Length: 112
Image 1 (cartoon, rainbow, N blue to C red):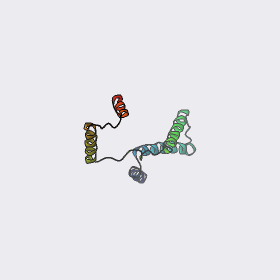
Image 2 (cartoon, rainbow, N blue to C red):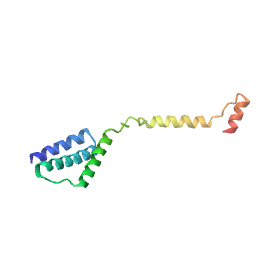
Image 3 (cartoon, one colour):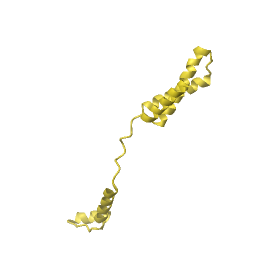
Image 4 (tube, one colour):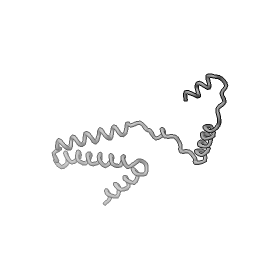
């Protein structure tokens, strides 16, 4: 009962300070550790399929821990008032006539 209670507290701390993926990796690594401790303690033989699964789990955990942090790549959210102002400015710029200062401006306008 004490071990299950400590496990529940560890899960709660993991979910508070990390995300769900880290919890899944921690559970997988705990299973691997339990099995590796069972070999010398209880003479449980290791199967080849377990070794393949353990190797893929450890490599996935290492790849996840070394991934670059992309959380700062997204731009901050905009207010709806800012968005309306940008849209109004864009619409007024499209509807206003363009002044031509030279024949090159006229050629540029005809191409676009």
